[in-house]
Figure 1 (cartoon, rainbow, N blue to C red):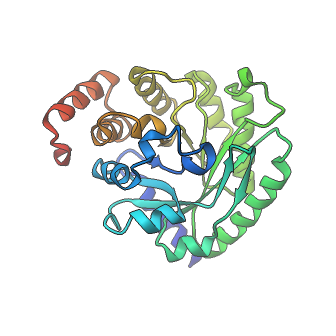
Figure 2 (cartoon, one colour):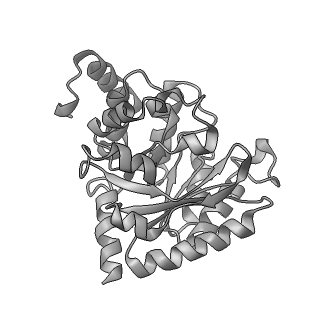
Length: 278
């Protein structure tokens, strides 16, 4: 029965038409500080605008869910973030949530993180192993935010496919169902990552993207090489029309729109504000 529960929850995260997941994350304040995260400062307003664009899911901590999701309950799935790094320990995700809390709050997945190739990989992998066992027993999908950003990886190597593939394959072997990681920057390298990984691979917004075109092209390229969706944050909620961008991204991910088509849709939505028609 527990495995049926996991399948039910997974079915709410993955769009049946595209077979992909589109999630938006608002969990950055603990990891990066609230000062630089201007889009998250008015958190209720930001969440409302994201939900209006109808993503499949949103990643957030228990406190933000408890404060901000009451009027949005049932409109999008909650991915409950149960660990985080922080400015004073940037390569060590510390657990602060539980599977039972996620169940009580109606979440459709538990989300935890790890930084590989660093001083604290062993402790983080051990913690993920415990979450994996409990999630399996209780029918809860497990999502991992796993990046090769430990002390042992030079910054200019953090998008090499071999490092990314180590993250995704290790996460699979630990029992993670959906792995959020960095895009390699090229379709050939990312396709290798996907081939190495039986679990679903989704990409983050992209540390190396600078412009709207960068993000949209990365999203389209990733979908075309077999990536199973996205979990994006800063790029979305720092945009001047959050809801319009969520809709445009959703049309790339689930409807197969080209970047050109998505930009045309985005411009129309920004002008007409008719989000509910899409």
